[in-house]
Length: 95
Image (cartoon, rainbow, N blue to C red; front, side, top):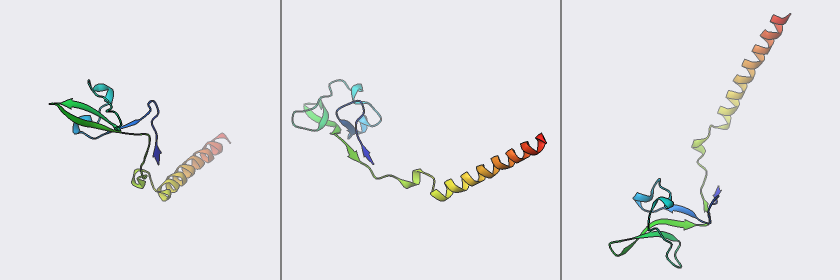
């Protein structure tokens, strides 16, 4: 799966522990050094890379995050039978 930025020119990928779970806009003094694809801060006269910048990334899909095809079909069949039985009961009650 390819991931592209939606509301920005770059994806900001956290590199530093303090950047994880935070938006780059939350940091004061964050800047992009010339000819570098990072966002950094200056701390104690040293450049500290906070985020890597990328135009897009490729990430393999994790199949364990989705139910298996067999599980989906099994649930679909159960729901179909349930609704079919209910419709048949309603039709019989209407007679």
